[in-house]
Image (cartoon, rainbow, N blue to C red; front, side, top):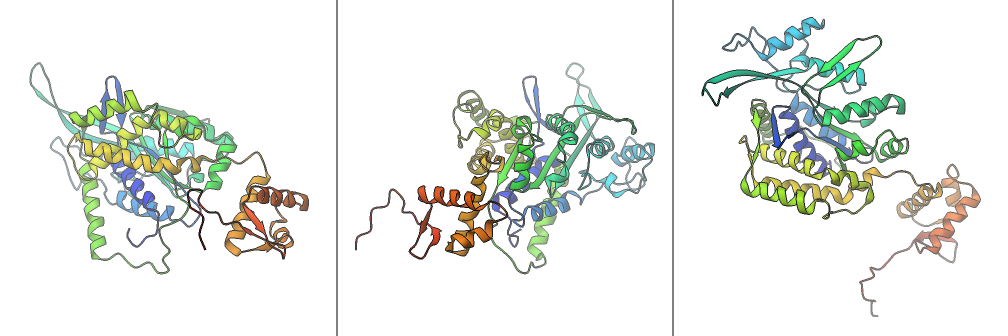
Length: 431
């Protein structure tokens, strides 16, 4: 991705969300009676053209490389295969066994979808893994099969999932259950019922600040969802590139290496453990620090911080499994995950901003942007630029406010410009 200008944070979190998604519902933490799987929700928030889609396209390519073999291609010792189950289910539901998407090791639904389509997709996304279990009493080794319904949603525009307020309420409720990896039953008047057991859903999506404002102002997204989602905000890309070259040999080798590692992850099954040092780090964070230590005190992150321990566990596991297939999380994994979250939190509240109740405030910001980008303008020129937003009296009120708060200057010719400021800590310059 070195030639792609997407922000570094988009690349980093996109990569780790992909790693967690590849583990599906086969690997988990257990904290007493509470089980935590490694799926996560992440929304990349930024203006159009910043590079959200470029990250998602590459991740989709990686996750769609591996397909389950057909029964005619590979048969297990017990005479069954993963694809045999998938093909049988497809036949029962009237689908062709040649449907390529139905054989993906890491299922992904359509780019634009609805709740009905999502639940139907998940009901068909049955995957299985064989494992051995030792009976503690008899010491007998028993071979078992674990099945699950796991999928990863990769959406270049989050708006294709979150639509109108009426339709989206049920969808958001479904996503809350999906993040917790519960069972879900969805009934419709005309299409019967979808029953999803042992569900596990990961989401990586892109969104613009304008879309985020609309959904929050309409109460489509609520606190329950924001607590379960990582919002990664960036205001600009790393760089612009006129011509994007074809991947070179080194990049192709990296792609193959990551793809092979994802296949290894698809064969893991079992409970994760923390090393002694990592366990003590997590205990101290949950019991002593989580309620008091915050990188960003903004009130919009209150619900996120209430579940930061869960995000930290999931991300630490993704960091660990990006380079290893051992089932023990080390202290370095947890520390690296904490550093990533702390950095993302610095700007996370900007993704959750709603529109101001003062309708003139956004126009004031627009005026400042115009002056910064195009230089000094007269009141008449500003009126011409902003006549679709405000009337003459409102424009003068905005100018008065910006002038009074020392954000703009007016010169002797009547031109307004951005006021330059010295840092309060900077000493006055001597002649």
